[in-house]
Length: 267
Image 1 (cartoon, one colour):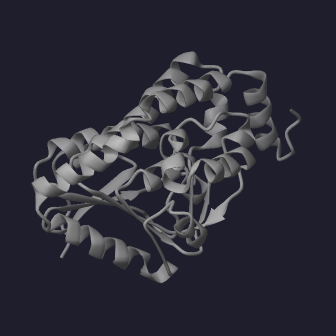
Image 2 (cartoon, one colour; image 1 turned 45 degrees about the vertical axis):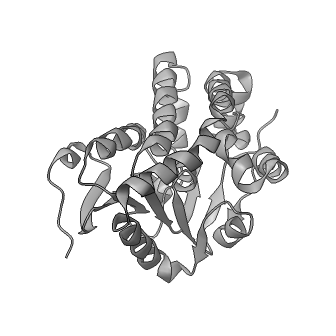
């Protein structure tokens, strides 16, 4: 029987928590936008989460999933557009994006994601930076930065080439094409693609298995493998800076305007 966590988790508005088994913390994303899109509050909480998890010694594994049929379709583009010219806000978003990436890499316990429906933008970062990722075979995944006139900066540069190779990463990022969960598994982007009805059960089973494993050996193995990803930190920093600077550029303004007006951008 799950029971609600009542300590530090009470500070969160957009994330829901419970304990479905010994040592396992389940986190549900509750994005308020369409298809579970994040607002600024949720983006900040997704960044802060990993510090709290890392400091809680009772957590031996994390299961991250959506609250309903969709995982998370990225940031709220309308909200991002309204804050486009606010330099302080853009810098805060940059710091939070950095905390999401490094927070997941450095979190000592293993992280499992279970995603259905759609994952894009920051939602896709949460999915692909996990240690074990389970997706619905029919889920739709995409990185849409280029469609908005922005560099793909929030996570793709640091990990996509390691997952699917440089050629495929450039193809997917430069074209902005979406792909299914089944295609993601075939490209080694995710750990497992399963039928939609099996995603939650599969994710829970794997997360419970990891929570029951030898914690020190598990943590050491995760840290060692993530050293490969960490070597690409300068690549990530450059891409992230380019994204933030580009948001205030002519291309960034045109990309957001075209999205809001539901028309093709004029580059």
